[in-house]
Length: 425
Image (tube, rainbow, N blue to C red; front, side, top):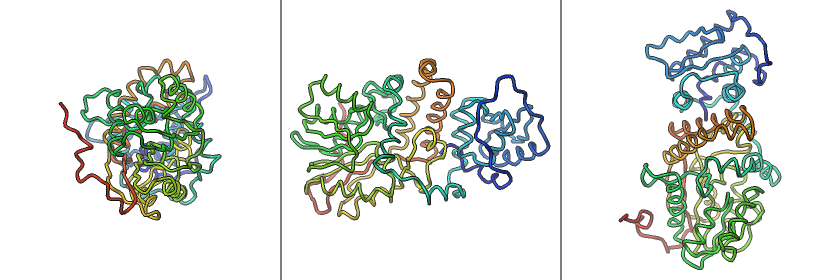
């Protein structure tokens, strides 16, 4: 995801590097050896197409591009250089977040250039191994993985998300919309796609801080059961539903999606599928089949991809353990065994890039507060994550799919798509 494949070919020339860690205070930089320069020159040739310059700790570089570089990767020591050459998928991010690698120039354009240059590269041997022996999202590990990311503390997310705390792709009907406006527009787009009617029942798998469930109840008059395993998110959502007087319409349930029971007019999941794992898609499809009424319909909103590669190793280790963005083919396999029909597919890739742009700007504005909550390493880690995610969506390394479905043969469906985009004014 973050400029990882472009440098992976260098791994055959090195031994496995140790994890990047902070340099002890007062230590001196090692002398640059001939082998360091040779390895740096090799890595530089690989990143030349991106227009990025590699600089060693003595200030030297073999960059010979005719154009001014977009930015510089400034390597602080031999361990960092070995890590970049051996396993950039992991060590690019680890070296940046620990301060062993600095990016001279704006971070986002550098990461985007490296990511674009790597799109379409064949999978590395590490990626092939991870794809073959990837982790599994059991009941226990799924809860642990969610806790790792979503239970960092509501005050942290309140610093840079919108007022509704919607942590998924917004919908910018107009690119000039504010983040708040675009997130409400997304919530309403999901409701229109589901064609919700007052009095209907909806099950939501993975509800975040509850914004969609509350929007569906308040504006469409439906009854919602929303499932989640994040303690912090559920506490916030339950307090909000009580405060807003919607407890008779919305119930937030602390449980895994696999335990959903009952029958519903609509199924919706926004931003959960990435944490399910392809090996559990059959279980998810079974849940949808046993809970959806014969006339029912549903929507799944998920980050996706084209080539079917494992998520960036640094992201999996530090940000989203257990995550995998599916291909469109993998996503639609959820429905095939159960006689479900795909009605509509939309890719909101550039909407997610713009959403992340808003998040990153707000995050940077709150960086001092984040540093006070955590530390400098955490600040750099999340800066790298948000910047790299913008690059991934802008380059096409990642997609954002919204897929609408119903049971095959259920013919109460719109003739056109006019209901999705009502005329304004």
